[in-house]
Length: 372
Image 1 (cartoon, rainbow, N blue to C red):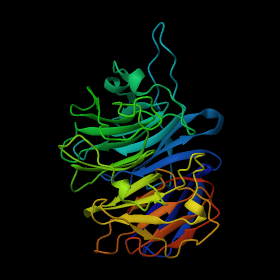
Image 2 (cartoon, helix red, strand yellow; image 1 turned 180 degrees about the vertical axis):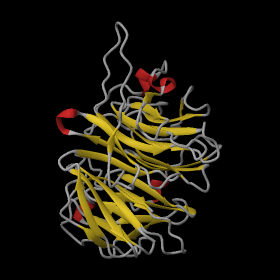
Image 3 (cartoon, rainbow, N blue to C red; image 1 turned 90 degrees about the horizontal axis):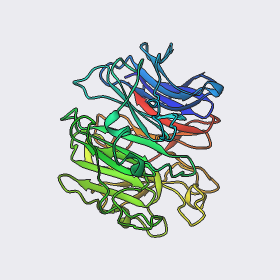
C-alpha cells in the first residue's frame, strides 16, 4: 500500500512517502518559507488535499490540490470574517489553523478553524469559504471567544463531525472550551462540565477552558477524549461530565500535553505525549526524556512507551496536530507518527511498542497527517 505523511512546518510543506510503511522517502519542500499549519486528505476523494497556510506578506489562505499534492491552487475566497457593523470590534483572520473534511454525505464540504477563533465552511472542495454565522455571530460568541491570548494565540481547532449525523458537530477553542451543535451549526452550546480550569476565577465555569486537542472515535463516536491545558479527559455520551483520566498517569509525569490520538479500531486505546507542565510552562519533554503514553483501558491505566526514543537531552515538544495514526489493518500493527519542534519525525508500526526516526533536520513541525 502506498502511503504518505504530509508534514506542515514553519517553513513549508513536506511529504514522506512509503510503499512498505517502513522506509520513507522525503519529497519537497513545497511553499518553502511559508507557514503551513495543516494538510488534510479528503477521505471521500483521496486524490484531493486541502492546506491551511500563511504565505509571508500575503497573509493567511487555503490551497487545494486535486492530484494528491502535485499541483496546488489558492482558494478564490479564503476564510474571512464578515464586515463589521458600526460599533463592533474588527475581526480579521490571522491564521487558517485547522481543517476538517465534512460528512461523507456532503461531498465537497470542508470546515476550517482560524485564529482569532472563527468557524468557516466550504462547499466546493475549499475554493470558496463562508463564515458559519450560527457560531461566529452567536450571542455568546464574545464570551466564548473573548480574545484571551495563549502564548500561541486564540485558536479554533479540533472540528469533529459525527459520522452518523452530518448536523452533529463539535469544535474546540483555546481559550474557550469545547462546543457542540445538533443542527449543522445554527445553535451551539458549551460542553465543559468536569474540566479543571485552575487559571479561571471560577474553575467550574461553563466556558473559558483551554482544550489542546479533542477527538471522537470513528467507530464509537459517543466516546470522546481530549487533551487539555489542565489534564486528559474522557466523555462517554450521553453523559455531559468529563472524567479526568489523566489522574491515572504517573504523578511525576502528570497529564499535560498537546496531542491525543486513538486506535481507529479500538476505542479503549488512546495515546498522548506528555510535556513539562511546571509553573514556568517550558513546553519541552519532561526532563529531556520524551515518551509516548498509551492506555488500553480508556484511561484507567497508562504505559510508558519510549523504546527507540532518545534517552536524554531531547528537549522538544509535539504540537496538537503533529501526531497521527494510520489504518492499522492488523491487531498490534497500528502505525503511529509524530513530528517534533526540532524537525524530526518518529514512527512506530507496532502500536507504539518501539519507535524509529524517519526524518530529521526539517523546520519546526506543526502538523503530521496520514494519507493513503
